[in-house]
Image (cartoon, rainbow, N blue to C red; front, top):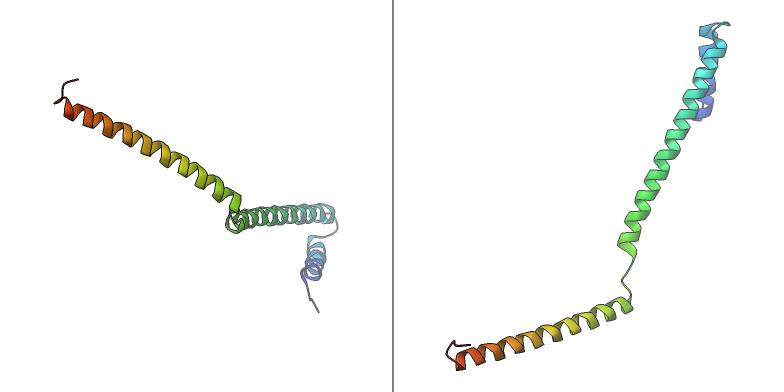
Length: 105
C-alpha cells in the first residue's frame, strides 16, 4: 500500500491533520512544509558536499603526471646536480689550496 516515502508522508500529514483538529490545521501544515523544505535543503547540501569531496579525491588520485612534467623535473634536477658538482669542485680546489699552504691563507 505504502511503497515510497512520499506516500508515507501523505498518510502522516492526513493523520496529523485529523488529530490536530480544524483550528490548528493551518499551523500544522505550515510546520510540516517548513520541515520538509529544510529536510530537502539539508539533503541537497549533503549531496553537494559529498560529490565535491569525492571529485577532489578522484582528481588528486587520477591525474597522472605528464611526460612533459618529468622532462622539466629531470632537466631541473640535472641543472641542480651540475651546480652542486661545480660547487663541490670549487670547495675541493679550495681545500687543496689550503692544504698546500699549510693552513695559511
